[in-house]
Length: 273
Length: 346
Image (cartoon, rainbow over all chains, first blue to last red; front, side):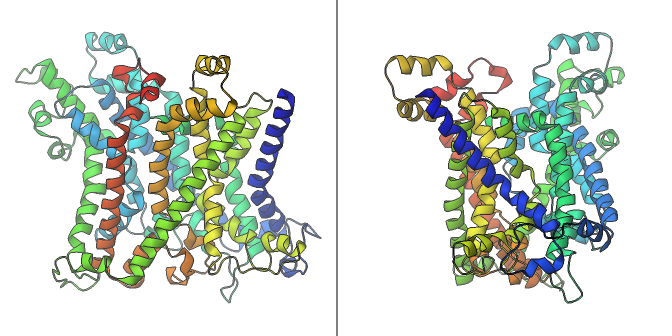
C-alpha cells in the first residue's frame, strides 16, 4: 500500500520534471541545429549534424561579450550598492528607535508591494528630463535607495542579534555607524550573500529598464539577445537565438545550482514574511 | 558612498522633525548642546533610514506624483504647452472600448493563470513533501524554470511554439494534426499562460516551506482519530497553509497584472514596437506602453497607470485587512513566540 503510493508519487514527480525541463531540451537541440534544419519537414527531433558553429556565430554576430560586460557592470554596481544600502537601512529598522519609526516601517513594508513597472515609466520620463538616459546613473540611484525586500531581510537578521554586542560597543564609545560597520555588517554575511545574488539576478534578468533607458550600443545582454539576432531583412535567426540564449541562461542556472540553498531559503522566507 | 550621501545636507529635509533636532550625525556626543540619549538615537535612526526615505521620495513618490499630474493634462511629452483637462483622461479610461477590452483581457488572464500557478505549485509541493528519496533533487529541478531570466524564458517558448521549427507543432504532426500558428491570435494567449505557469517554482518553494511547518503531532493525532489522507489535507494542512497561499495570491495577482513578457514571445526579434503584439495577448501594460511610446499620449497613459496603481493598492489593502496581519505577525521579532500557532488560529 505504502509502496504503491510511493511509486505513484515518483511517477508523478518524474513526469513533472520531464515536462518542466523539456523547454530547456528543445532550446539546446535548436542551438545545435544548422539553420537549414529549422525548416525541415517533418521536424528534426535531433540535430543531424550537431556543431558548435551556432555558438560561435551567436558570440560574434554582435559584440556578445561587450554586451555581457555591460550587463555585468550594471548588475555588479547595482548589487553591491543595493546590498550596502539595504543593510544600512535594515540596521536602522532593527536596532534604533525614533518617533515615527512605526510609520516609516509601515510605509517601507507597503512599498514592498508597489508595482515596479508602474513607477518605472514615470521615473524614466523624469530621468529623460534630467539627462540621465543612456547612462548607468539610474542603477546607481536605485542601488543607493535600497530595496524594501532586502531591507526587510537585513532587518530580520539584525533584530535577532544579541543586545550585548551593541551595549559593549557603546560603552567603548563606538558610534552607531561604527557599530554597524564593524560589528553588525561583518556578522551578516549570509544575508549579504543572499542579497548580492538576488539583486544581481534581478538586474541581469531585467529587460524593461535597460530597454527604456539605454541606447542599443550601451544596453544589456537581456535586451540585445531579444532583438539582436536578425538577418539583413529583419527576420529572426532562431538557431542563433537558441545558442545565444543558452549562453545567457547557463551562468544563471549554474550560479543557482551552486548556491541553491541560499536561493531557495530566501525565496521561502519571502513568502512567509 | 552611501555614507557621503547620508551626512550631506540632502539627508536632512527628508527626515521628520525629530531627526533634524538631533542632528544628522550619530557621533554627536561631543556636540555643543548636550542631548539626551533618546534624541541621539532618533537622529541615528534617521541617518540609517534616511537614504531609503530619500530614495522612496525621489524614485517612487515623485514619479508617481508626476504621473498623477500628467494624468490631468493632455501632454504628449514633447510640446511644452500641455493643457489641464481635468478628469477627461480618466473618463476616457472607463469608456474607451480598446482600453476596456485590454483591461478585461488582463482580468481574464489573471483569473486563469493565478489559480493555475498556485494550484500547480501546491501540488508539486505536496508531492515533494512525501517521504521519498531524492526530494532535494526534484525540488531543485522543478524550481529551475523559475530561475531563468524572463527574456530567456520568453525566447525559449518562442522557439518551442514557432510555427515551422517549433517542437509543439512537431508533436501535433506526430499525432496527425496540422500545425498551428501558436504565436498569433487566438493561440498566443495559451502560450502565455503556459509560460507563466512554467515559473510556478516560487509558489512551490513557499508552499513547501509552509507544509514543513505543519506540526507533525497534529497529523499524527488526526491519523489516530481515523482521518483519511484527504481529510487531513483539507481539514488540517490547507487551513494551516491558507495565510501562505493567500499571500501568494496577492503577489501573483500583482505580478500578473504587470505582465510584460508577451512583448517578447510573440514579436519578431526586430523591434517593431508593441503594436505588433497579437490581440489576444494585448494586456493592459502593453496598452500603457503603446499609449506612452507609440502614440505619445502621456496624459492618457498616465491616467491608465494611475487607475492600475490604485487598483493594485486596493487589492493589497484589502488583503492586509483580511489577513489581519497574521502573515507578518508570525515573524515580528518583537513577538517571536507565537509562530505557526497564530497562523493556525486564524
